[in-house]
Length: 77
Image (cartoon, rainbow, N blue to C red; front, side, top):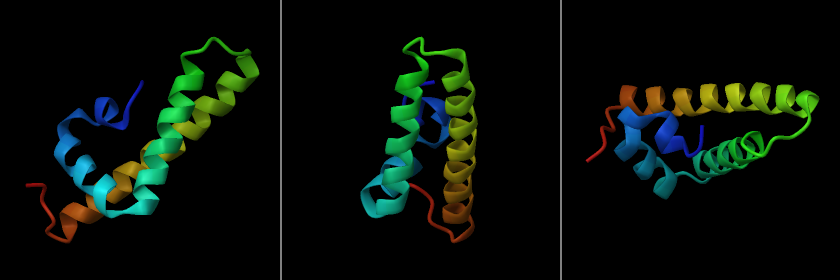
């Protein structure tokens, strides 16, 4: 895990553009990266389940943003 760009390597330029333009997307990315950091920190197993569940949900939100941007014809530069 790690950064959003690492998780969605093929979409780096699109992610950069969305981070610059969209506050909600930027916050989703921040949440993802914070949870990813927690995951790498060897916390209790129960916390791990919650973190993994949240990361999965955030990945889906990020994927939705990427698909929506592409369908509107906003390809990264």
